[in-house]
Amino acid sequence: MSVLVWVMMGIALWHFTVWFPDRYWGGIVGAFLAAIAGAVIVGLIANGVGIPGRHDTHLGQALIAIPGALLGLAISYLYGARVESTPDSGRA
Image 1 (cartoon, rainbow, N blue to C red):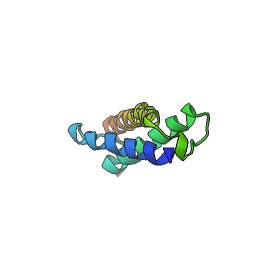
Image 2: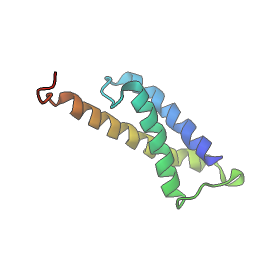
Image 3: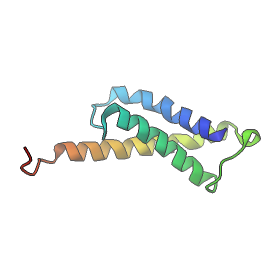
């Protein structure tokens, strides 16, 4: 059940990406996947690489996912901006 909470928090934070320039690696879909992956990975790390059950899911699980989703979005944005600003190496 906590994985569902982490994924939903990642999706909720992903909605705010419309306020930023589209420099995410993979575009808006890449930002979507980065937010979900970041939220789930940090959620798993915070819980000792375990998934809490239904009765262990509480508001704290949603709060754990926030830094992960933001971290995933930041990495995607920084990498996408870097790739976008690098000139092609003579490819046609």
